[in-house]
Image 1 (cartoon, rainbow, N blue to C red):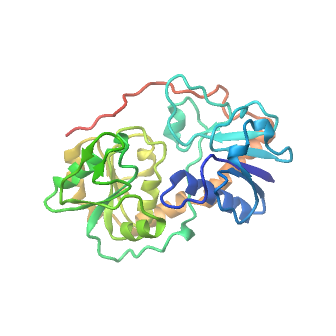
Image 2 (cartoon, one colour):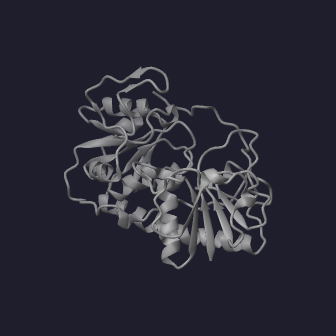
Image 3 (spheres, one colour):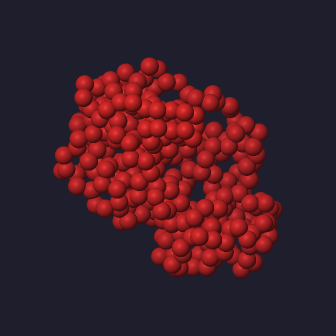
Length: 328
């Protein structure tokens, strides 16, 4: 099958790069199975296999090669839903009220899809062979936060509050800085939190392997949350809020969810009750690149038969507050 993957950014990921990592692992798995891949990506991308077309050079979907069997858009482009080649569009984020998405949109979790009136979704999966094998017997000395700390919906401040209310636990923050001027002047002063900014995969893996768990009290409907599956891979249970995809990904055996700071603080004291081995095996079995590729291939085959993924064009069915509930 001749498949194009269209994304405005650069792949593979240089540092964190959640979406970039998913696209790259999907492409590598499809290539491993013998499919021909055309990458329509940033001209700065380093592509060791397949054909590369600079995303910057394509102004309209009709300009894409005519020899493709299916086009998989990960970024929107003019004419996406009107060109003749069968296509799907993966929605990685949250669209606002009034935004009408293409009929062949795929979401990244069941909750994500349902909020847009759809039942079309594929969970993100990763190639876990690209990660260091975790040492599940290593001593764990802190908790961690992983995400874009400058985004208020990620609730880094809440994660710090949760940890500060424990007797002596510490939080290692990946993806955030102590002094932030990008999203309004903010300075975080506490010896309980240590900031590492953006980290590469090696450093991120090393830090998660020494963590007791991920503290992830997001205040929005998280579409998927690679921070969750990456943390579980390293044996880290997840302590977060029950929003978006989290109830799909975090089971009673792999973490604890609550919108209460007090309840999450108490739960951290029980982090040792969760099996690191179970967390690791659970995510490896259910959220891997092979399963993701299987499910996307089914979507490709469906649109190539002329079928539509959504009977009605998806759009947000119910507006939610900018920040969801967080009980102090």
